[in-house]
Length: 168
Image 1 (tube, helix red, strand yellow):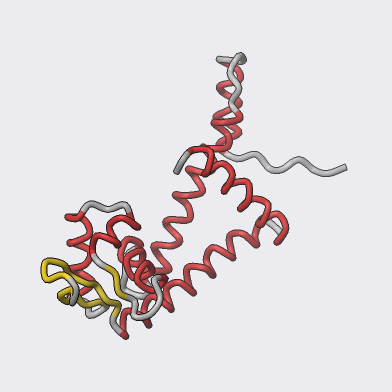
Image 2: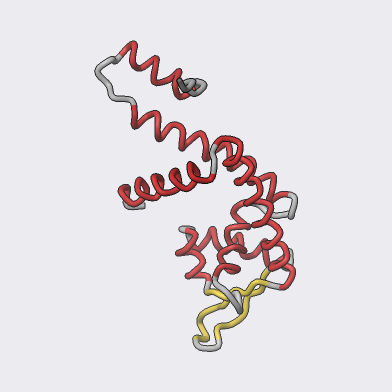
């Protein structure tokens, strides 16, 4: 006989709803409530991991997007904004800060005089490589504390399926 999993705060919430509204199916609340809480708990952990490299999560996102683009680690501000779902104003602020820190540079686009190119610097490459390794270690630690490899892969697949269904 397997022991039932320990209850969590979401169980308490759905149990309260069951008392006052027994007609409700609270399974969606249980799923999305846990996803929401997990996102916030992990965001705090990721913030700490990235802070040790002197960057925020938003700044990591910019550097990581450039890194993932492959050599020469260059994109336009518009490409970065689209990938990160940021306004141009929000992107400009992040780019300004990262450029002042020497983690990236902006230069004229050789093919369009009206456009700019954003390029990861050598220091930015070192920072993002260290930060991604640290962030993955934090995520792996959280996964391994609760799930075996098969369960983690199954969860990733189920979340992919749910994400596709939402159109996100």
